[in-house]
Image 1 (spheres, rainbow, N blue to C red):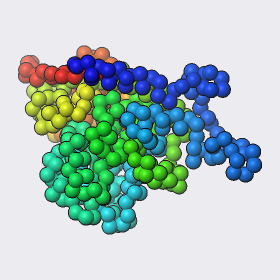
Image 2 (image 1 turned 60 degrees about the horizontal axis):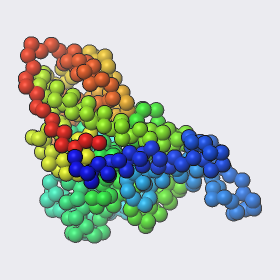
Image 3 (image 1 turned 180 degrees about the horizontal axis):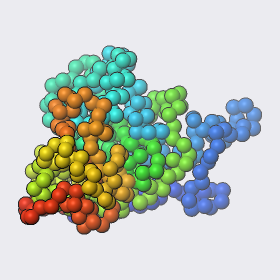
Image 4 (image 1 turned 120 degrees about the horizontal axis):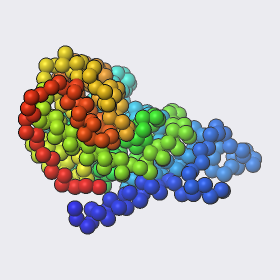
Length: 406
């Protein structure tokens, strides 16, 4: 690892510990106070100390939004009550007749929001493979106002080249914005705005919170103009997080770097194990050199993330048997918590996508998604071994070259 990368990661670790966490100016408390109030006293009508109503502004949320902006390396960030609430605010930037190009491999809730909510109000969405930049540029028209990308994607961990895509979009369609969902990578592994993205969205429920105990979302942007609109929607629509949730995300951010390192290390070893098991077909993990997006991930990410997906041989019957045998991995939706989770996209996170489109995107009834936690990795692989069934011999796994480390 070169010295420049060491310096960048050292600074990021320091940011995670201190961003939005300055001692309380009134008492000196090191842990930020939680302002559990709905309203604020005004000396006379319209004369206050910067706060009038907590839907509009809250000191605890202010701290979190400053921290999010610093971590993403941008000037502005807004916090929301969930990841989907954050995504909804971004889609409110559009007008009837506007068109959005969307990565085909994406979270089912995002697909549902676009297809079953906003499409009813005149927005149009086209789903395509964004890992091939030519697919995107070839579909851009004067009506294209937004390009929406998850990278790595959910659940197949596809990787899109943010820098190349941003350059081509802004060259060919200056009216269009590039929005990157950075939930899987977090600002620790990837900073989309530095690569040219106009908007960055997060489900704070996941790695930023890190403990499966809050719901939250975020939108970050380098643009003051975009931020002004997002802030308006945040206040006008009112989908804001509670002060307690904001406090818990701030607390989670303090350990984000050390958690992400363990998530990534454990995921690499878990992927290697799965690649050698005879009950497993394809393993989706960008750390493998034969992953189609490996070179791009190596370029734009500092490590390869804590998510691993794989195809189990035998389809749904084998998948259900696998889930029933797990002891340490918890079967559940969501991801990014300290505990390991196993998800079945076919009937869980991606069930809202019509079956035909699920299959076209590569989401089959044999696909299993793992959020690899921070437990002992030997315990995790032993749990997977038990759930997959006995194997007299394991195929040689594929070693993962950890080209970068936090």
